[in-house]
Image (tube, rainbow, N blue to C red; front, side, top):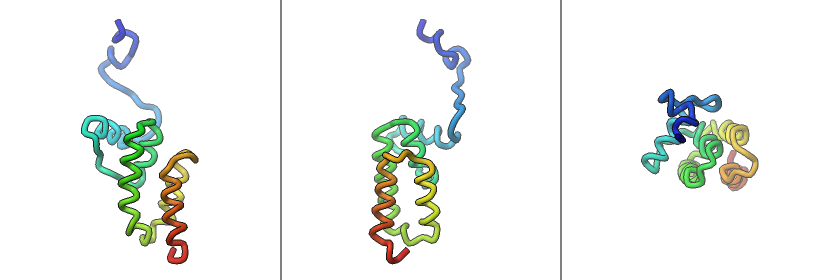
Length: 108
């Protein structure tokens, strides 16, 4: 009876109207395996978009690890802009990126 209420169960497919296919793939990968292959451009977006708390924690942990040396990259300012564009203002990835930028502000 419940299956009949959802078109996806009748059609055997799920459609998504927002976000990228890769973001969905990484969320499914995380849900099944507890990890995902990271991509700086979408990790914050996927965690924020799907409201999966443990995924947000994992994304933040991976990002912090990479930024220990990654702040030296010429693309770091672009990364900051991208994070602020794709995440909500309350999201902790923004705070972590701002903290790294402030810590190394003289060198950027």
